[in-house]
Length: 352
Image (tube, rainbow, N blue to C red; front, side, top):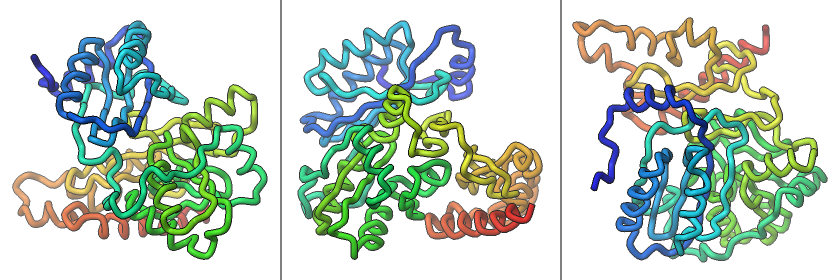
């Protein structure tokens, strides 16, 4: 039985774009011990591929984390398949805020060491001693009071395009870095009420336990994350305390919560919240770029990358790889380049 995709990416995308039926983008996670992750992975792939489901699913011994695109006509069958599985029975399912049905073009299910890459030794602290779970309305009211510390537990590129008003948004590139930053930033606030949030709630499960382990007394987390909050606030007809876009890890890259654009193009400073990866494959930096700059720089983050992307094949390899240090030297270079790009054009943009 085929348990992996064998079709070319371009063909898959063409097939997705030509579909005549609608899809629903959903997400769910659960921390639960899975005795045989590989066997469980193969069972799910066989079941869900047969329903024409797409998505990105991570399975580990500690549980499952999934973002998926399900055909509307098979949604009832899919939900039934969850409830008929002892591991997934009654798992909370969250629906996308904005959904064009084109979030994923294939089904990918991978076995990982952990659901969220955090670089932590979980034996060093009690990962089950999590913070108090707040529903969307409780979180909304506490944020609205302005009396408590609100912390965004996502990466910088996520919080840049959208966050809760007044939230602490560290310039972190990874979740592990975020944990260290937040602990240090709030080291003198261990008696305060801390309100943390992330996209769907899974990162906060680990983050709240980590903060409690480091002496924070009153840690609270938004249950279901931004996805749950956005849906509930709309249902209750309340004015959102989250402004801008919610970053999502699929083809859409983001979904607006309140219709506002709070970020700026990294190249010209104009209002923009559209993420792109630099078209120079040796760079591939994730950054914010407006349509005008995308045309001016041919989808690249800089003139250097634009020149490199368009370099002819007979140029010396060392010239074509010149800025390749951006990917070759790793996160340190990427972060410094990204911060310089933002800083330079934030100044330029403010003068327009």
